[in-house]
Length: 512
Image (cartoon, rainbow, N blue to C red; front, side, top):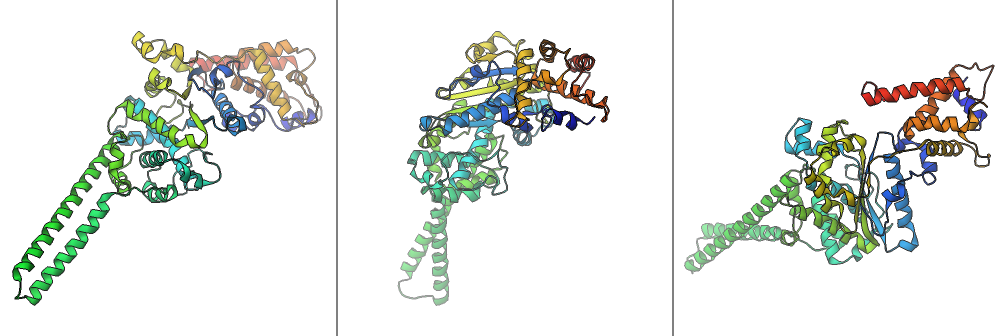
């Protein structure tokens, strides 16, 4: 019997249990506001006073689903008129492959453990800023993400609303901060092109004096050459001394302008090299940064505290600038969501590599910043490594203050309710509600299903269990003799099969 026929008999339009990844699950989108993990409120916290949370969970335990639910709740909070002046800015930090690829090229190492061993907290902050600053600049310039060929960075950011001219109304310091953040963290391949446009969009005057010296040196050199040419051709006999004095003064002036021009170019080049060496996750050549700096007055930047060293405070100040930029649009806090740390190619799910990448963020100063909440959704493998750390590490991390969730656990009853919600999400709106029990024979009780789901322990395995139950039943029933309810022997067989699969997965002898 065909699976679609079996489901259609129960008025189920699509298989509710075939998806294995929350990001690509169309059913989850329909029920994400109805089904939450029991610890969701603790993880979520309060958007008005965001707090950090560290969550550990096995693969398939719902970490990404929780992140998507947080994003949904945050979007509702920001759209509410009640919180028009108390919004919370989302900063999604889950695309780590581009970051690590650029970083590995910057440190010029190939061994994954060597590359990840170089990764520091300042690099994480730089990577976070590089995910959100291009979106803000996109909106200030009224451009779609990726207009200049760069990545879309996960979609547009609704900061100033549909009218980009609102950026002209922000105060001078916020404009200056946006320009500075753009120079550091905008898309490397389009920074130079967008610098001039951003200055015009903000109506911000910031001109590098090197251009003035360049013009003065060029004009002075031209006048000097013209004077020398005229003197050699005409060879005037009157007031020769005045000609010599004039030419000498012009030569001196040209030399001073050229010297000043060279000095400013060297200072700009040196600054570009320092920034290029410290912004390792961007892997920007010094020539790119220098070209961007040529369009602004670098004197304004030196007093701002540039990230020219590995000093954490310079990076923490970037969060303050981000808040200063977004404050005129009603944002008073930032929520950083960290997810999918096991997926990058360079990490490849290896616990020790994940540890090298994640541990720099387990820092109390970073996690307890004022008006900034950091949600770390981490694989359970890291929880086991955490137990081996020293007391000094725990004193620095202060995990007792971070809303620590040791493991995302799901009871059979919660998974049963979750399966019911998915079933009804795939049925017509006017259909009467059904439960998972309605798919099974009379001798299968609700408690039998709850007990079976309890052994699955997490949503992904629960959905696989139900999917294989339906598949096994349909594959053994002929089309001309349909059976619309799954018998107990099939339940017992698939239950044992799935328990064996999970056991093999935990021992590392099965892929999943």
